[in-house]
Length: 84
Ligand SMILES: [Zn+2]
Image (tube, rainbow, N blue to C red; front, side, top):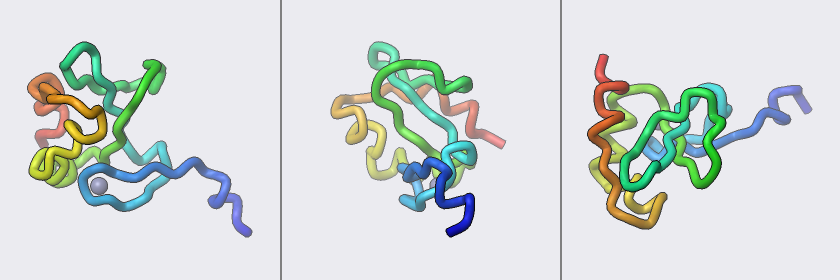
């Protein structure tokens, strides 16, 4: 067993691959607005995605955020974060 097995793993909602938590961006819902939780301090449900436009767009393409939070999510605040 390597030390890596102790790292918390999260699934990217874009590509569905499991990654170490620190390689992913945590997104939280404030009201109906999706926000980047940079410090991972916000309470409540979070969705994890790689910090790539590819994964973010994949997540949007199949409404992964809406499904994660079980409601219609406004992604306009976080879109710029994932643009190169
Ligand atoms: Zn991904």
